[in-house]
Image (cartoon, rainbow, N blue to C red; front, side):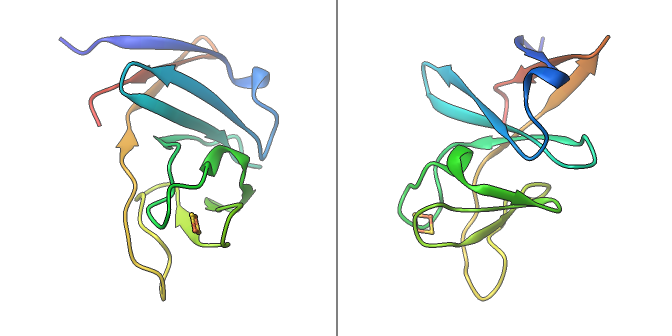
Length: 104
Ligand code: FES
């Protein structure tokens, strides 16, 4: 059975912002895009581990605050020419409340 962790309401995350969920297994960043899409990825850039939750969200990408790699939130892949991948996590929204599964 999938275990779901309650993250909070969608409106608790500012548009183009992120919330960090601490887990026993490292931090996960939950992003809200301008179009109210929600994505969860590990809060660790595939380049040198920068905190993606502090990056800038544009479209469905986030730019890492350290060296400006762009990560596609849908796939977790770095946008070319950069290469790398960050783990993604399933989310579901029920009655406006976001739930996160740690099964990446
Ligand atoms: S650590 Fe993210 S771009 Fe370098």
